[in-house]
Every structure is written in C-alpha cells, then in structure tokens.
Amino acid sequence: MVEPRSISERIVHKLSSNVHKRKQQNTSSNAPRPNPYVELESAYVAQICITWEALSWNYKSFERKRSSTQRISFNDIGCPAAIADQFRTFHILLQRYVENEPYENGRRPEIYARMRTLAPKLLLVPEYHDYEEEEEKEEEEEGFKSRITSAAFLMIMEECIRTFMNFLKADKEKPCQKIIKAFFGRTKRGSVDPTLVHLMKKVNTKKKTKLKEIRKGGKYMKKKKMSIEEEMEILMGLIDLKVVSRVLRMNEMNEEKLHWCEEKMSKVKIIQDGKAFQRDSTPLFFPPH
Image 1 (spheres, one colour):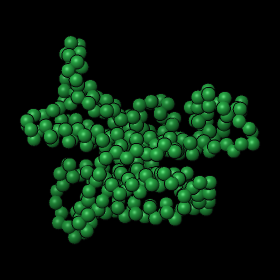
Image 2 (cartoon, helix red, strand yellow; image 1 turned 60 degrees about the vertical axis):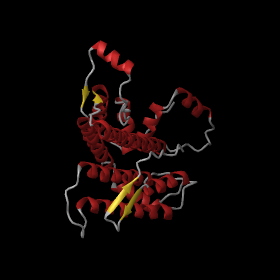
Image 3 (cartoon, helix red, strand yellow; image 1 turned 180 degrees about the horizontal axis):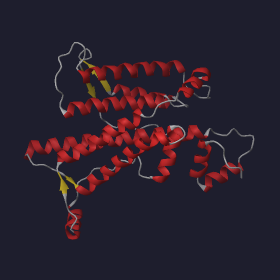
Image 4 (cartoon, one colour; image 1 turned 30 degrees about the vertical axis):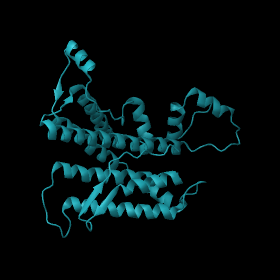
C-alpha cells in the first residue's frame, strides 16, 4: 500500500482504524477521494467548539453555585483538590501546545492531530463536580481528602479560559492560504453562498470591535475599573465570537454550520447603544456534520 505523501494524508492514514482502511481498499478506484485536510479540520473545529462549551459551562456553573451558597450560608463551598488538579492539567497541556506550536510544521489542524496522539487529553475539559458522601469517605480512608478555596479554583479556571483565548488567537491563516482562497474561493459541492459567509464575518467583526470598546471604556464612556467578573464576561463573549470566526473560515461550510454560527453570535448582544452587552452562556452544541 502506497504511503500518503502530504502531512494531512499521513496523519489521517495513521489515525484511521483498520475497519476504515478496509473500506477504503474495497471502494472503487474511480470514486472521488475525500480531502484529508478537510477531515482533520472538521474534527479540529468540532473539538474546539465542544471544548469551549464545556469550559464555559464549568466556569459559569461553579460561579452560580458559589454565589447561591454564599447568599444562603456565607460558607465557602470550595472545590476538591483532585478536581482542581484536573483543570491544572488541562491548562498545562494547552499552554504547552501554544508554546510548542511555532516550532511545528503544518497547519493548525495537522499540528493538533499530531500533538493529540502524544497528549490524548489535549483540549479535553474535566467536569467539575463535588464529592458525594461515599467518595468523601473513600478519600478520608485513603488520606487524600483535601479542598481548595472557591476563589483559588475560579482563578485556575480563569487561567484556563485566558490560555484558551491565546490558543485561538494563534490559529491564524497563513498568507499563502488567504491568496489561494481569494483566487479559488469555495468551489466544493454543497457549500453555502459565499456572500452569506462574508456578511456573517462582517457582523462578527463588528461585535468583536464593540466588545473591545466596552472593555477599554469606549470613546464616550466614562472609564471605570472593571471587576474580575466583568472582565471575564467580556473575555468569554470575545471567545464566543472567536470560535464563530474559526468556523466561518472552514474549507467546507454547510447550512447547519452557518445556522450554528448565526445562533451563537445571537447569544452575544450589544445593548444600550453599544455601552453594554449581554451574554447567554447556555451551551450550543456544534452540528455533527
């Protein structure tokens, strides 16, 4: 069997299961071969969407739980140290990826696929949950029971979110890719109208600009020091829009993905003539196809 030449083909070749290989061997040689890079990109984009929804949900969920508990009893709910360690691991893997990527060859989906084989937990967000009574007893018996404060756990998750934003910022199109797209455009069958994609990109850019103005205080707004909660809310809104912009850059776009982008952007609303915004943190799952 001939070894694939391109980076994308080699990665897909290695990651494919034996069953998938047999199916490929049995297909007619005249059948059109799927673009391996498109497969990698689809898997990568779906993963960053899932990662962000999970990270956002964990943060907002814990934040709400902490606030409601403090209103009732003024007690700090804290977080099991073992759960906090899982989020630290998530952060370390993500930070390591951001630092190492400039020394890797290939495009982001290709690099991500290679790195994922070395670090299977890359971009896999842990789930926050407090210990049940049985788990607490087991921890006590084994001598491992420990907790950290809510504030400390929130700081860990905030670092995860900031690093995820850096991860998204580093995912840029190379100049040669932009030229190729400009010349050839979207020629794939089943793609959506490029005008709609372009329009959605413009709306997305405008919203990002407005959010950045709100963060800076705006041209005609009185400058005031923001709380950590306000800063994080703006950052999370910017990440929402950043994820959408990455989806809109995909080589293959369909109606389902375009609808997802539209719905995701609608969850970030600019209000009060651009002086404030509202963010709906309800998870919105990326379409499977």
